[in-house]
Image (cartoon, rainbow, N blue to C red; front, side, top):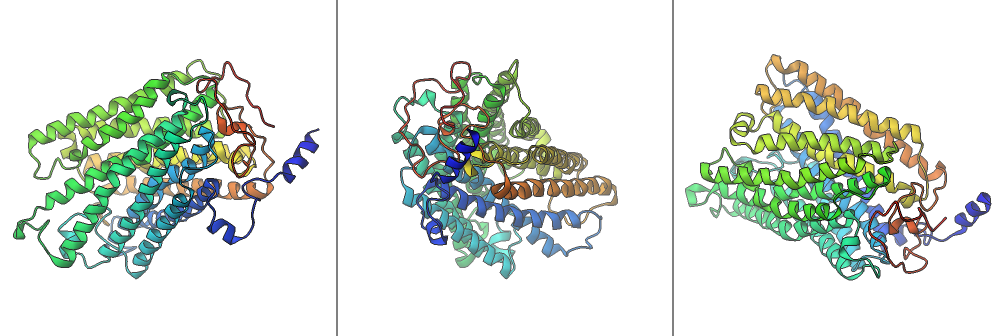
Length: 542
């Protein structure tokens, strides 16, 4: 019987074999294919950004600047930050997993605007290629924050070209955000009320609000920077009546919420993983949903905590300190509720669950050190040191990338119709977790001891911790290569996956693996709450 099912599955038409040829992919309007185009693109940018991180850690193995010169080092850490933040971390979960899953999770045939969805990938690609062209011409050395007056007056690198690449890519985020919001509002299956939505969808709804409200501010900031650099009109130049701190206000008004663009979708992934592998309805569903929206709103009110050592008044610093600590409340609610869901759950230690547990641990460390940095006195002591570097890598690498990998392993059978090797997937997750901590935990100590960030040489006293960090980066790099290898292998040689290999609850598991072009053989209806593991059978499709 199983052989007959396998043969029937091979004959079945799905989104991967519905059309063949490069043209069918480049002109596709299928959200699932567009998600795979994004997966290829963001993976390439991740590899390039990771390669630059390798060069950075090689330089920091020894105290002297003996691997690259100072100018090259400045270009390396700048392009590493730009590629990772704007071309991997921001689009990775929304553009790949969100694109693939949101229509499936709400029972829709596609996103509301399929052509705009395809256009968003092209805009992202054009912005990325433009940025890479600038890198090949010589890159930029200002840091990914583009602080003035260095970026407007003193740097002789490709500031405008790289800024234009980011500016173009921003439109991709806006189009994706609009598409998600309209789709979630208008295309939910009958019976799928707001409080029956998966928390993954809630998280992407909140993220889309930040996309739409925050990204235009970044675009305006880049335009002002370009105008100042080309025409010296005095927006940020005090000699001409301008204010350099204004740039920081504008930049961080977008870039701090951008942190939540990176982490909120990952939190949505975590909710799906924890409830699926604990076999329990998530603890405090409505609180978790509102916490996503609260994080999105509060994220716009805390940009000033990046500016405690600027000319900002102490009273403004106190207000931003309090607001920054408030953000920790909904974040802590999520961690508490995931933990409560696991309590007395029937926990299984599948690979996605290992990534989920790794995420909770690393995100908690990153969040607690974030509270420390929100405190005025501590922030002044460790400002612009490796303590800050360690903190945001625990959030954005330990959190966002662990979540992305966890989600990719969870939905990989749905995406490809194939399973991956269990041993190697668990081994890879453990190697990544160990390598990450060996890389970045020593940087907390380096920062507390006073080692500044962005320096290509340092006193001998810091070498042991830097060697530990570089050794950890080597392990981490190997860890990232392991899933790349077995996931590519699994696409051809992996065992065929059933419709619901994890026994999970959700509309995406009620269609075939891989799904047909329009997602469902019959339009689904919903007559139950989200995550009702105790009441529902595991799958209706084999």
